Length: 165
Image (tube, rainbow, N blue to C red; front, top):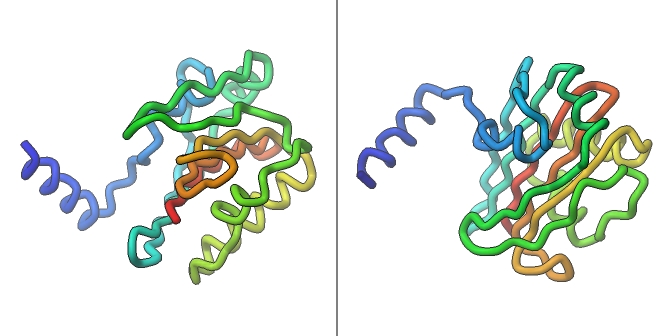
C-alpha cells in the first residue's frame, strides 16, 4: 500500500496534477457547504533540511464568500499528525503574532512568484480586506510549523500557506 501511495505521489509530480493539498478541506475550513472553486494555483518551495513552503490560492465563488461572512467563523480542530494550537478566524485588523508573520509572510524563499503573492497577502492584512486564521506547532509563542489562511473578501480569494521551519 505504501508503495502505491509513493507511486501515485511521483506520478502526480511528474504530470503536475492540479488538485490542491487543502482542496478537500475548504468546506470545513470555511464552514461553508458546496465550495465552488473557480481557479486554483499552487506554489511549492523547498528550503533544504526539513524546511518547506506551500501556498495554494483559491478563487472562490462570490456566494461562498457571502456564506462565510454571514456564518459563524469556526476554525475546526486540527489533529493531523498530533494536536495543533489554533487561532480562529479574525478580521484582518487584528494583530498577528510576529513569529507567525515571520514564518509565513516573509519572502526569503527566492521565488519571485511567491514574493508577489506574499506582497498581496500583506496588503490584504494591512488594509483590513478580509479574515485570517492559523494552526501552529508546537505553540503559538514558539511556532515551527504553521498553516495560515487569509480570505480576501474583495477578490473572493483564499490563500493557504503551509510553512515548516
